Each structure stands twice: as structure tokens, then as C-alpha cells.
Length: 254
Ligand code: UP5
Ligand code: MG
Image 1 (tube, rainbow, N blue to C red):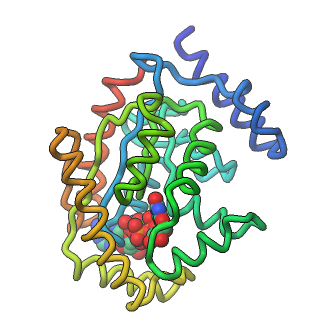
Image 2: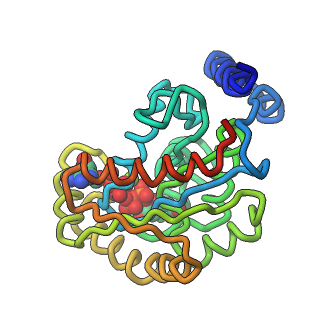
């Protein structure tokens, strides 16, 4: 019974956050009671793959937060992913798109990078990720679309380092023509100004040139788990869920 308490308090804390969205960031973390992990640290799974590989699709299904409070916490997952905020999902791209809508000094830099298919400076992206993590009581984060290049990895290692343990890099493998087809389809309704043929080509080029070396680097460290994502969504999801649940069982204290 007592082991349920941290989860229950974390849940209450995020409800408070939803209700009093204006709570200052210094006040908020004291309300968020973290889920306990085996080593007392936060853990992360980097979810990588080309544009349109299906990163957002599987992560949001693992983590259908859907409660609009912006804390990324996942309380309605299936299977082993239960009602406590054991894990949270953040998409680096979504964090950047939200930030560019604000009247922030970074908005223009973010918009220029996204709309040209290049990468936002690492310090901006990492700042948003760190704030998102700090506002969550989850033990394991699924981080979609980061790190994208050497700069991102350097910023992560310097700014986060061993403070958050990188458990896995979940890499969604998909042929480029399939990804391009998906982006073009989605572009009809997504409203994303980077879902055009011209920008998509640039995104693929940057993915091959800058992101693949990162995947290869983590592969040499034995951290990469590959999942083929050119298959029906349910099959991709089932395989990903198994990997994530196994990792959670290893990391989260009951
Ligand atoms: N779909 C998904 N899975 C399917 C399946 N198995 N079968 C059939 N259809 C499937 O999926 C794309 C589309 O395919 C959807 O319509 C879906 O229904 C369908 P989605 O899950 O959205 O794919 P995802 O991999 O998330 O594709 P996305 O386009 O979001 O990937 P990107 O990596 O290009 O975009 P992201 O949002 O991460 O980044 C956008 C930009 O932000 C970058 O180009 C960059 O400018 C900037 N950025 C940074 O600078 N730094 C960062 O760290 C992150 C982003
Ligand atoms: Mg996405």
C-alpha cells in the first residue's frame, strides 16, 4: 500500500499543476513527488528515427497523456504501463513548436530552423527538455527526436551528464521512400510548414548526415535497439511496448 503513495502524490501534484498552471517553476517541483528508481536517478530512452519513421505515433500511444496539463506524464497506458506517472513522454519537436508560438526571444531562431529543415541550436532545445523533465515526477522519460547531432550530444553530456541515465536508444528503422510518403500524406492536414517536399528532402539529408552518426555512436556503446517501423502500427507498437516495459521493470521500484 505504502508503495503506491509516491505515485498517488505525483498524480495529485500534476492535478494541482493542471489547475494552477501559473505556479512558478521553483514552486512546482516541490509538489511533484518523483517515482522511485533503482538508483534514485531519472532515466531516459531516446527515441530516434528519420522524419516520418513513426516516433510520435508509438510514443503517444505508450503515453497517451491527453490531459492537456503539459507535464508529459503518462497515466493511461496499456499493459504494463499503469496508472502511476512512472514514465513521461516529450517530443523535442513538439517542445520547439510550442516555444516558437510564444513571444520568446528564441521563437524566430526556432522558426527559421524548423521551416528550413535544419537544427535548432542545442542550448535552446536542451533548455526546453530540462524544464520539461524538471516539471515531471516520472522515473523514465521517453524523449522523441533528441539528440539529432553531435552538438546535441555534447550539450546533453555537459548540461545533464550522469544526472539522467540514458538507458536505451530506440531506433525506428524505415525506408526513406515510406517515410517520405507518410510525410506527404500528413502534410495535407498537419499544418506543419516542414511537411513539404522541399523541406522534407532537407530533413532527410540532415538525418543521414548528422543523426545517423549519433545512432552509430550509441550502437558502439551497446545502447541501440532497432525496431522496423515500415509495418502496421500495431505490430510496431507491440514490439516497442515490450522493450519499454522491460526497461521500466528494471528501472522503476515497485
Ligand atoms: N505513421 C506512423 N507510423 C506508421 C505506420 N507504422 N504505418 C503507417 N503509417 C504510419 O508519423 C508520421 C506519419 O506517418 C503520421 O501521419 C502517422 O500517422 C504515420 P509520426 O509518428 O508523426 O512520425 P515521426 O517520426 O514523429 O515524424 P516527424 O515528422 O515528427 O519527425 P521529425 O523527426 O522530422 O520531426 P520532429 O518534430 O522531431 O522535428 C521537427 C524539426 O524540429 C526538425 O526538423 C528540426 O528542425 C527541429 N528539431 C531540432 O532542431 N532539434 C531537435 O532535437 C528536435 C527537432
Ligand atoms: Mg514526430
